Length: 529
Image (tube, rainbow, N blue to C red):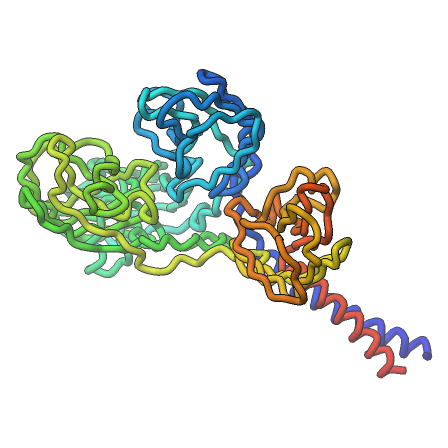
């Protein structure tokens, strides 16, 4: 081939390779799963009573492994237990971390826990304990902390700057959003001559939206300002993506806007994750004590109740969170906000600053007005998503790979369907080995295979001849950490009969693209030749 033709072919192939590599990088970035800050945590159980000991490892959000677990089995009604801390008060209001109780002795055994859905290591399960419900006693516990700092979601509005319009009363200034709870106004000017003037939040600067807005910060503007620097501590319900797209200087008496700025995401900011419950509105049922009102979810930490009515005649009445409005779930619920309802309300607007553990998707599907003394529900509303939040991409969905054939005729093509299931097509195995299982390990090294675990219930107790097999995986399987390799493993012989290394589907697709680029490069070379 002439040198010029060879050079032209090389340029074509490299151009295709560059494009495909760029696509691979974009796909891999899109598939990157959000970091789970507690994955990989390890810590030892304290030994307070009944010989409790063991090393706790957090696998993922739904499972834990305890290596070397020891417990004498002599106490009644003993359970794995979640609490906010290991103080007695927090342990008493904790909950069972996993189904079933510890009803036998354990002697340095390996235990796998499938956690109940409401476990959250960042809020309600900072401590995992071995707890006796009968004696109200802690036999041993461990405090769970992040294994590595998880990257905080970017706050899209941080760093926004914009000038206040000057509509009246000499209002001027440059607004900077510092974070979700603070704003700075440089060079703020206002003549101070209007009554009841406040920093004000609204969805837009239309009159209708301003009239429906709310105070952005405590206190009022009750004096003149002359090119001063002002720091605003925002009220909890402020959300720049929904209810505070406009920050204004507003007179409540005159219903007048003296100047405003529209707040937009800062340049280069990542899009704020969708909060599926933001904007939900629903009416409280009226079951007793004249309770009524319209509930609106502002964001994860605040709720507004408009037209709230309650006669104030019951003791120990609180805003209350529960999983449902069944009596059992209400009895197991918790206070949604600090303070109690200790007076009558008559068609009033109430702002609730929620306690940190509130999660509308799990433990606060119902918001109620609840009397702790009478154990009575005076009215409630069921909170539902207003828009489906985008689910994080599962990087391994769609992976395909062939089992290596090391022994006992093992063969087959493995496809990852989702986090909990796998399909193996054309699966072959002669069925002649005892105690053979689908097996998870961090790698196919002997050390990692020996430390692995069963990937699915049941064993391979018969011969398979090019069959299609569906695997329902155990909860602790995590392809990014503890199940990078899926193997056919004999527990008796400690032998690997065949395995496949599972990688993100995007990366696998990228390798196919690169192979395609090589083929196209060869073809281009032939065409030029």
